Length: 315
View 1: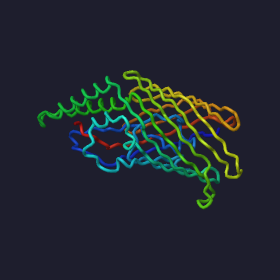
View 2: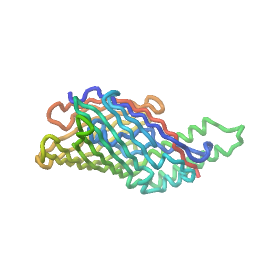
View 3: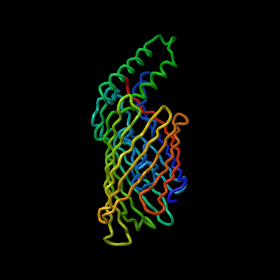
View 4: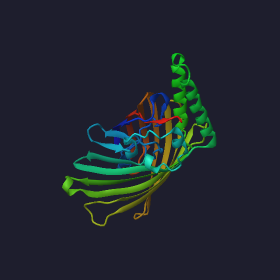
């Protein structure tokens, strides 16, 4: 097997908070996004990633010993006391709020690989029905918080915040731009580029329907440092269909890869499952067929850990 029992451990650690805690709600998804560097390395369980909100800081470890990645979102390293929930939902082009940078390194056999990457959301849209329900949930929380302090129903407040966070995660339409640069070397002095790429993830989530559709368009160029002029140019396009319930997400992805110089096509078929075992702990597994014609059995297992403290005023 090309990849068997790969453990991908992701820890998302979000820094800072804004506004007063009594009227704040979390604005980040539970899901810890995969570093674009790992996607370009083809070391992640899913090759088609849902656009999600970057964490202020996240850390990923591959096989616990072979390598890892760090991703950070500069915008959220500073407190944003004036940033409101209305700002979040009405901002259709959150390029700076979602711009994240990542760096990764891993070792395979005797060769070391290092990579850098970025991601940002070019466009994000919530349907009018969803925004109406979000506003109703926001007002319900405010009403609960304005009661007599001695009569606050903490369980009701917690349930209302959970409902609001769930609604917030149901983005109707997202367009995410990502890219990465990969190099390899026996030493850092002999570092040479081996692969670069850029891609779009386009997500559509019908409201009150438990399906997500994500389309992929990716361009990449691979270079063999030992063979001058032996560049390979690939164009990948594909789609992922995922089904969600409260604690799990099951996705099927299909990708066609066109090797332009070789005039050849390769395919990737994968079934990817995410299961939330507890708040902030998600188990992920992937099985299927990888792009290569030999050693192409895909079998990946991982665990994601995520913590989020990013908040926005309910005003």
